[in-house]
Image (cartoon, rainbow, N blue to C red):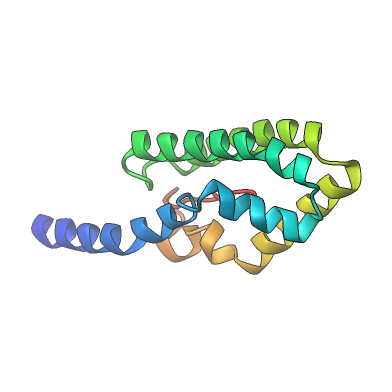
Length: 139
């Protein structure tokens, strides 16, 4: 029984982890290019956003690597990702106009509502606190 559980856990881990990490592997340039298209950034804004995005991606990736078992504590992971989002938004708001920030938040909220499965695994994994909710990049 324990062996079957271990094998099943390993299979799930091998299937899910690459898709979770894929969101964080976007290059900084890809994220900034997408933001430029969707928010109409100036060249100066795009240049100013690169270090913000780079730091945010690095923090999230380091946290997930340190966390190891992504499904161990849903509340802790969600809280950390929300903290990273808040920090990122504070920095982004220094560069983006109010209109651009509003558009960014609207797009983010729409993306999360359309891709609920990517944001919250808990429905498919049960109600025992297992899942990764809110762990997406701004774009």
